Image (cartoon, rainbow, N blue to C red):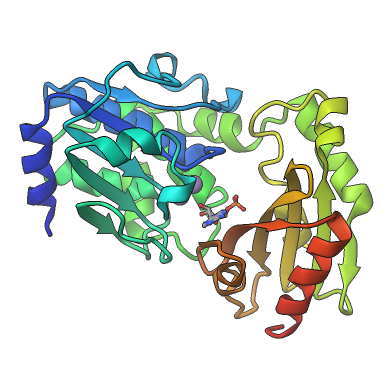
Length: 317
Ligand code: AMP
Ligand code: MN
Ligand code: MN
């Protein structure tokens, strides 16, 4: 499968739908919006399915065009972005009924669930894959498309600081600067701006943070009750897990967030300088992700989930 095959499918399709993983982050949102803008340049109309849109990304071009559902029962083409498996895909009903499906992703744990799968596990962001793809398709990356792509790159690299960053990451960003994109403004908006509710959640999570196993594991959590009390918005939990990781000596930072009663979404990060693959740990629990940032869903009370996770983490630290 090559990029040309993807272009053939796009050219053949009339009704196209674009989607990404649940609780979308900057890379998921940036990928969907940039894909939609790029398709317009190819003369195509597409629907973008998003059910929880973090307000942080509302400034991006095309953010207002997204839909939570569509009337179209069968699309000619469905494009899944930044999503390793079908079970985490929002709008999977449209994906499953589409005539053709394409998966574009950068997770090493991708299940290759599309008819065409374009997966590059060493790319720092799905958005960076798209940047290369659009260039290959001769689609001009204007400041609108560039802003969406940059959002995904900045958020998935923690602001250019993860080891996943490539020379192309900086070359692409330099090119956008030359085109007049306000890189600093996008950076400040997507990484350096906290809503008050986000800060309040962080404060609670930090108060509860425990250092386990001689300080090698950082663990903290947030319950539904916390989110209600601080009037949390979509996306307010993003970034909490990073705080545990930055503590000296921490090899694995764990943050769990109550999804439903006694069901927790786990976020795991590997500490800097330690050769630990958190994706492998999350895989044991049916999740996955990247070597240094991964997630899963685990059931039980906070204490039970903590115990299950620590038992597995202990084996590898
Ligand atoms: P998060 O902790 O939610 O920011 O996720 C970290 C990374 O792991 C992201 O690349 C996610 O896409 C991936 N990930 C999170 N949860 C899961 C899961 N349940 N299954 C597979 N991958 C996941
Ligand atoms: Mn993502
Ligand atoms: Mn991503």
